[in-house]
Image 1 (cartoon, helix red, strand yellow):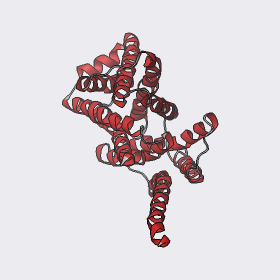
Image 2 (image 1 turned 90 degrees about the horizontal axis):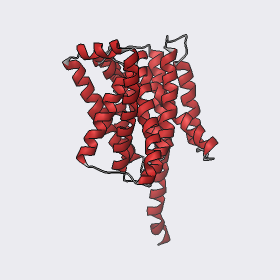
Image 3 (image 1 turned 30 degrees about the vertical axis):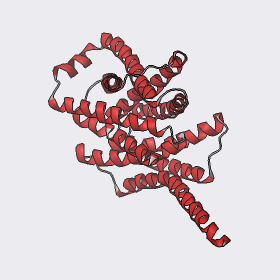
Image 4 (image 1 turned 180 degrees about the horizontal axis):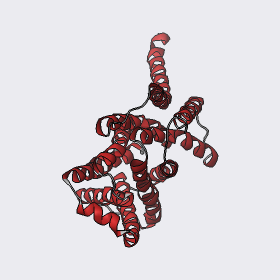
Length: 303
């Protein structure tokens, strides 16, 4: 059940890129980050007001900066500079980085199945992101790499906070603090390039409002609630493997909303990455089922 909730969250996140391209083209990425995070945090706080303990503000602020401020900025840079499906599939390499960081920093060695799947993911990604196959923005790819690192470090901090604070408090305040940090950056950027923000405001349309509603409510208020809840039950590496739903959403929305299309080889590489991300969870579920079956049969054999 927890892995399903995690997959719903990542599926909703996977719609970000195509929804942004289809409904909010040309909007400043930093502004989109603020409008996605801060209203969602305020709404969740209004539903259930909670306040963190005095000694946890510093960690909460750091988590908000990583999970929300920097990550959201990177996500919207990717959304406006990379194809939807490529952005979503690229995030599938998160498990590889998560395993490496946990292995190097925390001395937590991944299982053989996780290592095999991670290497396969890396291989498929290397083929898919081959410059000879696709013409991709270096700026967008750099944002993807930074976003991946923010997601791993932010998820680790979120897990730590979940042990000290109620999950709703962690959810609410990282959105509020991250959104406020982005707002300060936006105000500075606004003073240098006001035309970008004025243009977005002057041409505000119903399609823009619909896109903002989806990003704020579904992609953030709902998806991040599921994300923080799932991290109470899953490891960071397990959660990153649940990201299989992200590229599924990215490919479907890219096809339906912005008319993206790829070659059969490229679709095959995407499918390979999805299968490899699911493989460790499939093996783990099978092992649990087999062990449970053996335990049920043991009393019978004793008779």
